[in-house]
Image 1: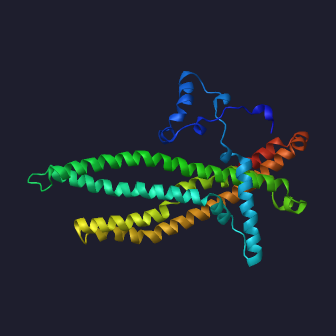
Image 2: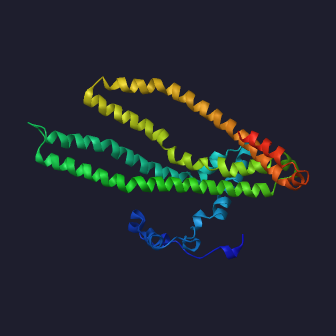
Image 3: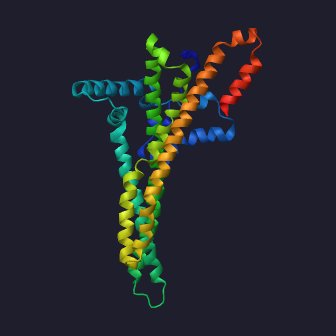
Length: 301
């Protein structure tokens, strides 16, 4: 990398206290600059050490080599998911606990709100003290949701970004070490497609993965609450959801197969485009622009 293109502008987050990090006050300087004028490259903060591609790539590579050594002893295939979990799993689990608190707050808030509403009903049995408790609980839940929601999504998206960077780093290193046999089986278009599309799906996965187990716990908790409130009719709505699970599973399989086919077509198109760019001099020499242009348009459909 050309060192002249780099600038020294450390992020204020390194010097911020916990209150500033919680409310993102450390970003006020760049907001102020952006309000006064258009932001330039020099205004952007440097990434922290734990977000640098060299650091993340080496960290994931160490776990991947350890995973390969373990699998060589056991005779199993090495798993990239296990290496990613050992690299980023502990932090991701902590954010899962944060999401659990948020979802529990979402369930508790309507219960407190129903108690507050019962206070205003004629001949209500809710006392003044209980009404103040319900009102304070509703307000406290709103504060908790405001303080947890955004840090959670920012945190898991940062983890997804770090996974993208780490995977891109080791893929780039591997592409530089490919043998002649490996280059025959792996095209430049396939590598570019992996870096530009496939690796980016980790960010989406990190955002929604915790809902797989939290959603199940949430469904059970809501069913218990509804059973306590309205009795057996609460089961009717959950039976509809239960019978829709096979249909949703089938739709998910179809979407997975569709994405796989799209990825194959994308690899093929990137390979053709790369080969055309490599042979551009020959194409221009023989005036083959129109046939190859038509061929490329056909592949893009």
